[in-house]
Amino acid sequence: MKALCIGHIAYDITLEMDSFPQENTRNDVINTYECGGGSTANCACLLAKWQEPSYICGVIGYDSYSEKIKREFTDFKVNLDYLEIDYEHKTSLSYIILNPHNGSRTIMRKKLDLAPVKRTDFTIINADAILLDGYEHQTALKALKSMPTAISILDAGRNSKDVLDLCNKVKIIICSKEFAEQITGIHPDKKDMNKVAAMFLEMKKRYPAQEVVITLEDEGAVYSYENHIKILPALKVVVKDSTGAGDIFHGAFAYQYYKTKDVEKAVKFANVAAGLSVQNIGVKNSFPELEEVNRYYEQL
Image 1 (cartoon, rainbow, N blue to C red):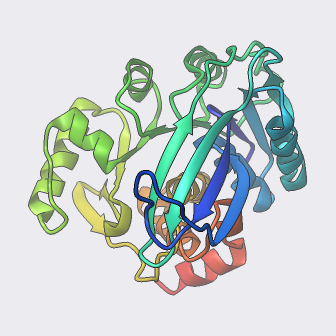
Image 2: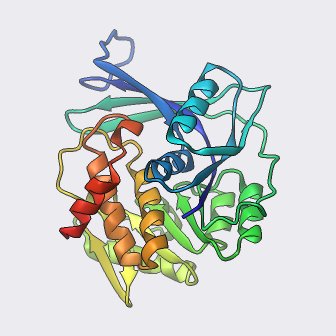
């Protein structure tokens, strides 16, 4: 599968701490973890790790962090033909405060207004899958138009004009529970599966032409298969760090859906990959080996 991953690229700095710091106090950091971040950027690295040709399309700033991001992409063997540098701005940063004892994380972002992607001739790629996160909207539209037969998957995590527009243009929407709640106005608690189903049905009414999958964090995912709404529980594992689990879910879903064209198989495979990832700290450290995911998936 040749994957074109278009979207926001950042650099993540994770601070491992025993508890969330109080204002105006001095606190010790247990460990720090640094790596490139961004939903589609993480997808590109995961798929490349699994030996699938992957292109990253996005913009980074001009600083030491951008050099680290480029080096990381190169190490994973991600194609950089569509990676651009904005020499007038710095790279977007995310700071993550992590408590590994309960898996909680708090994310603080410094997102900069980098210049948009300029290199948008996708005719030479002929990608099998297009992975989007709602950023680089005009570039995403050009890619969808250039490769109409490609599997297009949107990571819908923000209720923005650009994301809502792409929801109507892609083939598969994988959205967060928070996004679905904002769109539908339905707010189920963790134990109210009837409301979860109602939220899913409302999303399907709004996007009848798309496959819809709603990720429920530690509650798994909800999807439809053969006219039935199904809720797949998350893996029962000890969660140390859920940062990037959603990105891993998206990349793994694309991997399996391309091979099987089966939504249920893709959701189950992605659920395994994401579940295995939360047992480790740091996004790139959390990428599961493909053999491990396959072994666990085949036992389901």
